[in-house]
Image 1 (tube, helix red, strand yellow):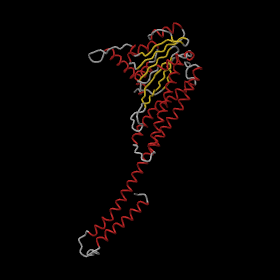
Image 2 (cartoon, one colour):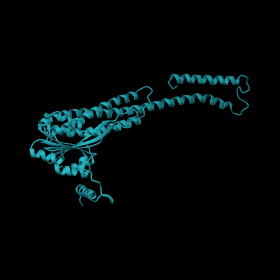
Image 3 (cartoon, rainbow, N blue to C red):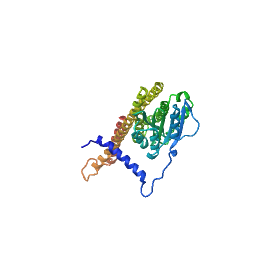
Length: 369
């Protein structure tokens, strides 16, 4: 009987065949509307000698121009394409079908893979979600994805999420022709540098939130709910899942993982790797700090409950004295001391007041009241 690892390729192939058949036949009685690829293309450009060539290009025209010149590279940016739309780009640029499937469906861990003469890199993007008070926020970090296919004469970027725009990266690179002359690897560096810079900014803002939460936890009359700290811890874990898996791929790019990354670009990746390492350390520190804050909040709650129980016990002791004496003299006996004495009632009240006063003073002295 074949193993699961032997069956997995055939299962994937069957799934892809079924999806192609569904696209061809349509869903239900009505065929699916065809959306042109241009609806998913954010920008498509050809760069030669570090300069962007004028004009508008389709993905076929761009790569044809580059290969006819024998110089430069094409960069096409896509935003959330589906299987049908990206298939034309994949065929034109020779992208591996497994990487294409990951690029379409997203929800991948940060990784770096090599398919023949193409690099495929996944980066998780993050955005800080503004809020009025970190002690009541339900969401702090919003995540997205950027996938990059890098070949010798092309770069294909696929984005998922509302905050994953690369317009600023493209503009900054176009203003630096010396960097663009280094080829597609320079674009990959620009994207990685941009993503790590956003990590640094988000970490700085989260650090301010944690300072506010820490001050609230250790304030004298704090009523901080541990559930809110758990919410922040969950958000920090989301950020951790974006940052930590990227450390390995970034290290590979800085150490010569592929000939597609020339020596001149590796030094730039080393700088990004250094910044990413700092971010990873900070995120790990945030996680430990939140664990400490949870313990502190639980300890304060336990102390507050102990104080409440001591007060309740003290008041119960005070109430027990008159209850006991009144219970004794409330019994239906005729022969009892001071029962027929004229000053018996005032004397009982005085004894009750004296004993309660002594108990109250002792409780106050011991901090129970």
